[in-house]
Length: 383
Image (cartoon, rainbow, N blue to C red; front, side):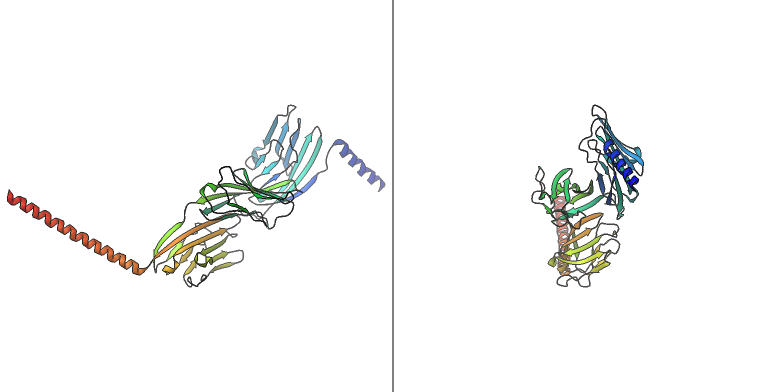
């Protein structure tokens, strides 16, 4: 036992003398479809420095510099569309994580100051078959929530929100920062809010200029990696206006070809701002409701495939604004519909008016024809 202890001390001494840090393995769980940045903790690559990244033992990226500090950063051809290298720090960003990307990522750093090894064991969780960018469609003047994916902010969490690369919000509990920022042209003035429990970003009174890519970056002060989510927000002009006759049916189209298993679909009416229909496959909810005052009793029908809502035997009391909210891990969609219902009595008056107008035109036409013939006869007699 004494000899084993001496051997262990000798190996530790060799590592210290040679400048080699012991390998540390950090576990990283990433939602499938999100991105993650593995950090080297190097502020700037030194001259004659070499950084290499390996996945399951296979070299995937390398950054090196010569004596003049000229840096070359290369990603192997096989991973070129997947990886992004920072040529200043050697940090490795893995985009659009898939379950196939799960495994051991090893980092080797060699420089004149010594060498170090680090490892990250990445696991892709909750496979949603996403394309990595959550698509969000929202009507102008409505509000939209971009979820952080956190159930609760922890003290060590550091969160930043960016719009087209510009910082618009950040949370750092340790530094006492919980702020939103406008951009130079003022497009977000009074429109940005942060959820103080989850760090989700809320954009109110949506305008056309807010369309674009939003990215949230989440890291912890104790970790060596940062996770990323990207949202492509599109502002839709105006609202869907529908005009229907009393007694007929109208279908409010959800606009999605099929409901995802993680989607929650909610239909709301402006009458009492009440929920009138809901689909949540997770909780097995599929229901229509009568509304706050019962005006929708026996009139609503949901499409189980698309979530579209049909109002049957519609009445003038159903005139008004309707909201559709679709929220899920892969998309967030907000739509607004305005329905105007023409009463049957009013339609009768319109028909009578049309008939009278047609008759008047016939009479006027007949009078003109008679006068023209009389004029022709007078001219003929003079000749």
